[in-house]
Image 1 (tube, rainbow, N blue to C red):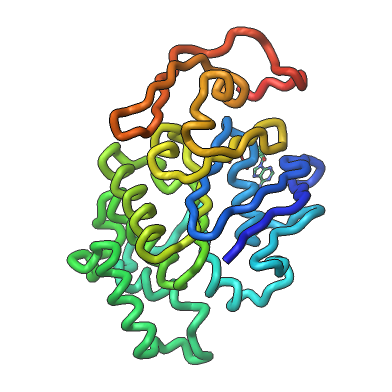
Image 2 (cartoon, helix red, strand yellow):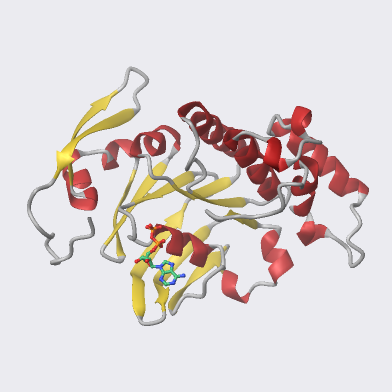
Length: 270
Ligand code: ADP
């Protein structure tokens, strides 16, 4: 399933956040959006996930505008996990995963045999079987995030949108989450568009990284193409040293902030 974003402008009230954003995600790939705080990453993900209407331009799924799609039909193709998500802490893992079946429910809201089979399969895939009867309030941050991702998977999406899925997690849980995402991508062919703060995690799990700055996309490339001191200086206004690990994956060590004021557009986002 091909996802394309064309000539997109979006914002809130008088504030323009994205201006002329255009890119395409090759099917079955993981693409990660990076940029400074306030650069519009979440806004872009919300527009792609149809939580926010673009002012102009469009998001196309196999050539069809998502903003014109039937809601349930779209939810069977694309799932979004926003940064903030709430349900009662009394909800069990199994119930939460069941909520992801809403695009397939009949009018009576009863789980079908197929719904129950999918829920079982996803609990297994996300290694949540031992936690299925636990209430969300009793889980660690990493377990809870796995449960939320499992809920989005219950929609059986071809495209998964994740907004900072590793925020507030300890380092092991961060790795567990991105390893789960990578595993789902490899095993089920799910295309992933996500926002990550941590450049080194992004480099480890992404096929492509997209940088956002000044309302626009500045770069799209492989982790090795994007993790370059000049690019990090331009996008994040940091000085850094970049190395390549023995596994061939690049990583950066930030060494300080860029000292000049502003950039070539006269903007300073830090
Ligand atoms: P990022 O995800 O890169 O941190 P966001 O997309 O969250 O950036 O925000 C981009 C800009 O839009 C910021 O200036 C932010 O304050 C503003 N913004 C985000 N959400 C809203 C909203 N609901 N109403 C008004 N302004 C918003």
